Amino acid sequence: MKTGGRLIVEGLEAQGVDRVFCVPGESYLAVLDALVDSGIRPVLARQEGGAAMMAEADGKLTGRPGICFVTRGPGATNAASGVHVAQQDATPMILFVGQIGRRMRGRDAFQEVDYRQFFGGMAKWVEEIDHADRIPEVLSHAFHVAMSGRPGPVVIALPEDMLSGEAPALAPAPRVEVAAPAPAPADIATLAELLARAERPVLVAGGSRWAPEDAAALAAFAEACDLPVACSFRRQMLLDNTHPNYAGDIGLGPSPALAKRIREADLLILLGARFSENPSQGFSLLGIPAPEQALVHIHPGPEELGRIYAPRLAINATPGQFLAAAAGLSRPASGAAAEANAEWHAWSDTPPETPGAVQMGAVIAHLNAGMPDACITNGAGNYATWAHRFFRYRGWGSQLAPTSGSMGYGLPAAIAGKLRMPGREVVAFAGDGCLQMTMQEFGTACQEGAALLLIVVDNGIYGTIRMHQEREYPARVSATTLQNPDFAAIARAYGAFGARVERTEDFAPALAEARASGGPALLHLLTSPEAITPARTLTQIREKR
Ligand SMILES: Cc1ncc(C[n+]2csc(CCOP(=O)(O)OP(=O)(O)O)c2C)c(N)n1
Ligand SMILES: [Mg+2]
Image 1 (spheres, rainbow, N blue to C red):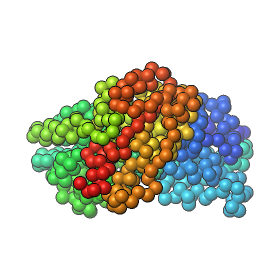
Image 2 (cartoon, rainbow, N blue to C red; image 1 turned 180 degrees about the vertical axis):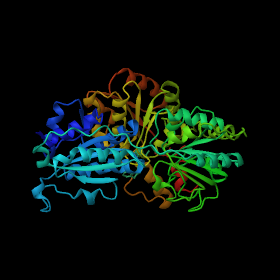
Image 3 (cartoon, protein in one colour; image 1 turned 90 degrees about the vertical axis):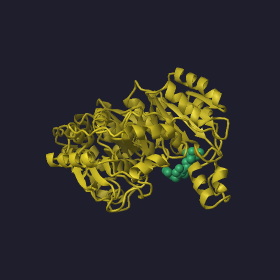
Image 4 (tube, rainbow, N blue to C red; image 1 turned 45 degrees about the vertical axis):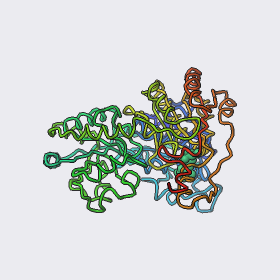
């Protein structure tokens, strides 16, 4: 006989789980106890939102579910912010929630929540395990659901008495490998015809279920077919940005030339992407439901094909399977890729000067030169524009960013990223507002020895919202000004490196010191609120200039 908690932990070990992100609770003590004798390391987060975002980021990198454990009620509701990221970003993740005892259900017991209702519209599947002898079956199902088709979050509630009670010592489920749908030969033949006819093709890469080696296959396909390759919103890591076919990213505030190229394309290949609100520029680049462009939509989730856009050719496949099947295709060079690449360079090579003593363009240029292999993470805020537009993402693992626009994501994602890629430099970008959503996770980084670099871009405002506010309701500032602490001093209070950067020329020496510190480090950049976008100042937006 074994406790339910032990069966859960042994089941996770059998799936190859080496790390879980958690905040403890009395509701799942039996799991915490079983972890003691396991090969699984619990990473102790400070708040469940941070824990869930760490698990999500880990899932993004590994392609297997990131695992998060939280307690019932307040723990589970806090974790919802990370579950939502996993849903929108199509990331495999499993959230385990310690639940009230089975006999108490329905009494509005202490911290009771109906998880099927609470997570119902957000998670791919919500289950509660009442009988410990079904743990192997439910874990197997959960891994399959989280990873297959369009991946996403699964929530499993674990009643306290089920976890602490004894059950037969069942063998764990075998390691889950999910089906990887592949194109039919007829699909590739149709694609070949469309490619042969196309004069202005574009490929947009996005979504999840990419394997590290798929980037090379994408590059080869793009070269053979002279395809300009754009990456969808916050998916710039899918093609090395220095590749000659790279056409930039299509997201918030894209290059006008790229948006025009997609609008005027005669063939649009959407590879893994959904082309939702942000990449489609408010659902305006493609006709709905019938795009002007001949649309070839390739997605691992069949339910995503035809959901918004009726494709000319729908292919249910993972990016890897598609690229393997399309490997023999070619198309005479028309110069389209080189032209798109030149347009992107014109958009992205030279950051403009902005008001203020710290120039973000210079900061990013410095990172490009000195840390080309870095993984850049961010949450939401206008500060992210600088990284997205001017940093050269260099392929798989170089980016962790939420298409869901979740503030607070950058720091927890960087912690997960650094733990998964210890040999790589990981740089978290956060706005002053963004950071304060999950700032307490700096303690997690310190405790885990996750030597990430946190760059806080402090303009004293919730800049994105101030920008919209000044545009829609000029000079009527409401609830968008922040009174901020000395962020570098906070880092030092944790025993980490922290420095304040007030002028551009102070950035390079501060960065060198931060990197030399060997541990988590924070650089507090004081930027001007006027420098709200690379192109326009806050005053220009207010005055509609
Ligand atoms: C969790 C969450 N809450 C609120 C928002 C709305 N929101 C988007 S950006 C933003 C302001 C970000 O401010 P900051 O991090 O300081 O970046 P800045 O725009 O000033 O560069 C807000 C409030 C959001 N995206 N996510
Ligand atoms: Mg700000």
